[in-house]
Image (cartoon, rainbow, N blue to C red):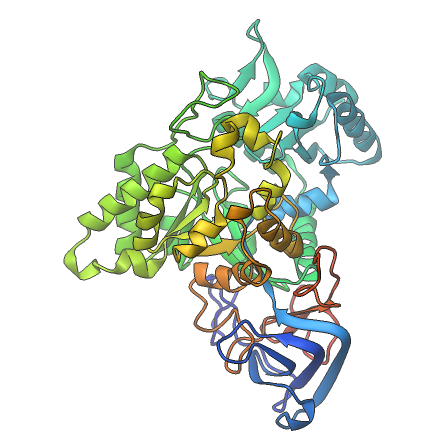
Length: 537
């Protein structure tokens, strides 16, 4: 991975590539959405090297250029930024077993059996099953072992916070003292794992996979992202996710899109060693609502004995914020429940007070992040704004789990569920919002994200089309502190562009818009144009 200026370093910022000639390439479309101040629309963009050098209405008045690409019937805008994703699992979902369409435990077992009969490999990796949708029980470890003889099975729940494994994996993985092994009334493991047990088995499964499977998954994920008009992804890595080797692969590799890596660990030595500008990300303060592990101030509506648990104590989290801020490292935390969100704000405020005077504005300047923030109490909005926190949110969660009868309502009750993912209130308070997918929890589909943010079942929580587009482009640049040089289509800014058939920015429903060209740092990551190809295409 390289940075602006051409020195090879692991910072998530790409070097300025050589252009397509000193005079550049003119891209002409039916419309260019700039998202910048002043000019809102144009018709043409001139790209030289990695930069946009001219934006205008009349292509014939463009500065001299070497090449021209006319995109009739298309609109150009800023490339999308996915502000929270897990790329290797996303790729594994494309090259291994996708369980998102299964609708019963019996169907899940049949799908695993069919896949096992058609594919080789030491481990069967699957993702996307949602037991909330199943009318029957999940397969037992013994049933999974029976249909996959001699092979390990790791099936990740849709939110990634629980998994289902076979009997062989239960016996092979070091789970004797791990919490999160779900047992039946007789004390026998059900094969369902949460918390620490899920992390242990995920690491075990990754270690047992063939190296070429992981390489193929990474390339599949970046190609897919580029094909959706995504030019930059905030990769949320961590020791409990895919591990250090996976982070190194993303940092050291050459990819067609930009990778901005985060490392979700209390130990900040890894981002310092790799010279990253950011750490944390998926540092877990709690779990997920679907798994009843998000930390809530009041009990779950469907399990009154449960409130979830905080993963860290206040002193540990405060010290971590102090350390990160003191060394100038932006950090983020995974916080879904209101108890976890109150802890994040409380501890960051305490860290701010503990910093020496010369670092008085460092907290706001670094733009520390909160990932997800699904149950954010409205009385915290002022403090979130005052601390300069960025909220990295996933509108697809609301589309999947919100509304009457949805998982949010079941877990929280109607009143609390009506206030989840309150994007309107966040935006009105001036809090930076960066939209992402949390792929592979939800599909990496930016137009579905935009639609989910504006077509809310509770309209008071919705934002407009262009606000949602901005939160899916400039919002991610702001979250990564790149908005000074990327995120809008304007002369002098980086040439990160996406062109779509039709005009999804104005269509009644933008979902399904086909991306025909993605340009990242002035290079073609997807589609065709007289510009240099992006690496790793």
